[in-house]
Image (cartoon, rainbow, N blue to C red; front, side, top):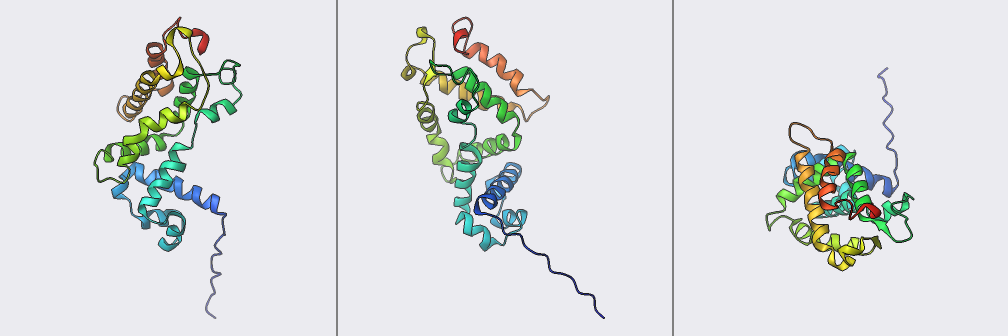
Length: 212
């Protein structure tokens, strides 16, 4: 009598869990191969979906990119997340600590090298005006400034008001981006320790000591 194989039963996941699976798989694949080196079928195979099943969640390859940027990168570790930690530097009555937030951001980025690689690869590819993420990266300085401007920060009186800090914020983010690129080269560096050196230059003592 021929043996009968019990068909594998597909587990039905919630849309939120399935979307998280798609984001995690795409972060890894795009970080390894670049956006143009990854097909929708590659991502579908990685999460055990058909390509039409994947398209149900992302709509198109450009939709996959939007999902990657919005849910895989942008919605992680923003100032609200920092304040929600309850850390004294984040919940001070006079406002959150900008150096404290940047330390928080670096520490979490260090724990997520695949996200750093994704951002680095997309950032290089998106230098081309034809890349679907070109406008996102071109507009990112404005977007970051707008996001950070929604938080009340504790600043030394001598540096002026928040509206005067855009140059400092952009230098800090540029330094962070460069440090993260350096982290994928040899010899390896400890991002948290390296950022401590950067912080001493960007937020010097004693000027910023009461706002850390």
